[in-house]
Image (cartoon, rainbow, N blue to C red; front, side, top):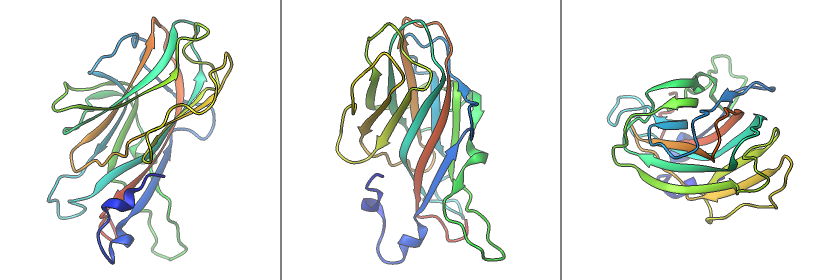
Length: 230
């Protein structure tokens, strides 16, 4: 996982560092991505992670959302097009408008306990995945481009492909060879720190494609400076 400890405060704040994860489905069901993704579109996205708190809120007003990884597993591949790349960008506004599937209610803090009044901590991250409509960019900055499948074998995604973006650590490239069958690929990109109201946006580009693909989504992230019971 990323080195999010770099922005934790001094003694006592460790208790305010909470890790969350979300899986859109325990089995094969996925979310459909946009079929019209042959070129980059700032208003078309497949994933938006927004820090849903407002700075100065009485509860969790200064939480920082730190994505750790995003894993995409193809439920259905596509028989048209070439290559697949994910373009990651950050912005200073909420970049979700409509469409896709909300994953927010599925998110779970990974701490569990047997205490009689125990309740899982609610995530501050607001997450949507699928065929998303995003508002115009405000102050967007490109974080990384993950070229998971170069132009190879005239197919951008195979059923069973597993593409993982890891946030944090040294900037890396794909681990392993590109094949003409399902594969697992990992890219490492810089750590992201989402302050209140900001977003991480993922865009998929599959050259010359016109077919929708279906993907299972798994995400892990850390939230810093949570209020104790929030």
